[in-house]
Length: 378
Image (cartoon, rainbow, N blue to C red; front, top):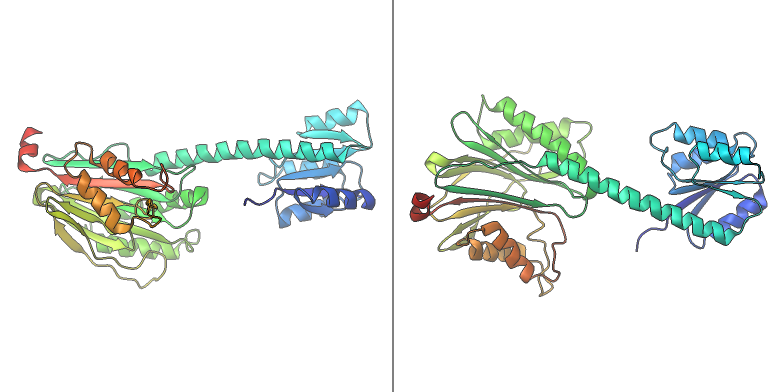
């Protein structure tokens, strides 16, 4: 059940203030203040979804309260309803010019006020949802690559579908001077715009770290250690925790060297069956002394490496249990021979899911070494 909208009533008349607190409190979460100055203190303690305020009050009147709130970017968009004994057009016009959402003249019908609050809060929530979705899409556009590496004998496919405004999934790649590629697949702990913001900031750290260290090392483990140090030392991101997979792909040697900081374990899919890439170390942001290790694997002809975020393995199947790594591996095996393997994998999972859509963000990276015949045809 979602929380009730929080409404602040600012009214100097004690009887009316108590009446509004009682009547509005049946529908909304209500706080009260006796003048504009106390109202500002209440807003500082908890930002309301809407303010109902008298105009004529001692210490600080309603217009001064509105002006103070509109001058602060953190509070300037709070919906505002004025209550006043004044019925002259000058007061009404002044309130509307200053951005008041409604203006009720005393005496007024409390039921009408309750209905109007609901309409304004709903409108504000719809606007905020659309704004959050737009911001989330803007972040996603910056977090995700526009193209993928194109190497003879290989197929590299990337897919991402954020849930609503998205969370903290991230993916990036860069090409080193020796012809190898560095891939990063990560997940910031949390949901929604906050996770998306931290993912954006975190990816900036990763990119700067990788590019700064490319001349020194191509070791995923050394890069991971440095990213962990920076994450813990940074004041903004010091309480951010992230799982991260860094891989160095060497197409000429059909080899992948990787370090894993608590991320979903990749799946190596071969014609003989799927297998987990077992190794994983501590997630980032927990221990400044954490160490990471380089491991390597070879991609045989006709095999693929599947990397993903937890939107896949935590999806609930029709059995009521999560797919887990085993379920994702079965889907990957079924998709190996398909012309669109990622689409086939996701369709395979959804056909067996409790719901017809994914419950979380979905991010998939599929790196496939083509069989000899396919490579020649390509």
